[in-house]
Length: 113
Ligand code: 5GP
Ligand code: ZN
Image (cartoon, rainbow, N blue to C red; front, top):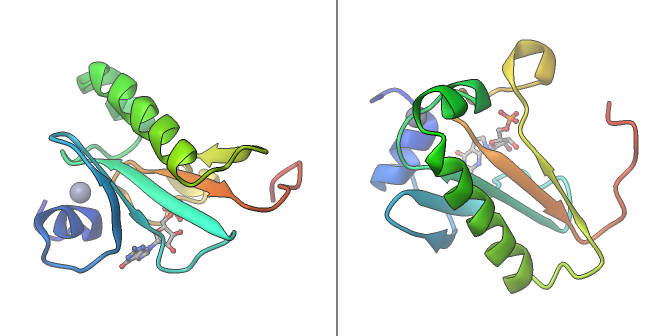
């Protein structure tokens, strides 16, 4: 998807501070952090959201969760963190390339807004 922001980050056409990379997964710092640690974890292939993930590439779910675990350890988020994947308009998704937010370094409120 040539006009997708995160596909362009994957290709290196748009710079990002990369924290983790494998053949199929990329993680980088969010440009507008909502917590002391705010990382975005994405599949390199373009999938719009978790529905497409489960439909077209369910085995990637494992790799994404594995990456999230590694990153949380690397960032030393020992007292906890939150994973969020906003989905669709009501979910507050603004970039329509699947991503998991890792938010940590402060207590998280509940319920979310
Ligand atoms: P969403 O709102 O779709 O759940 O999350 C999109 C996230 O992408 C937001 O937290 C936003 O700050 C982040 N973001 C938007 N544009 C860029 C960018 O160019 N670079 C990086 N690293 N993050 C971005
Ligand atoms: Zn994309």
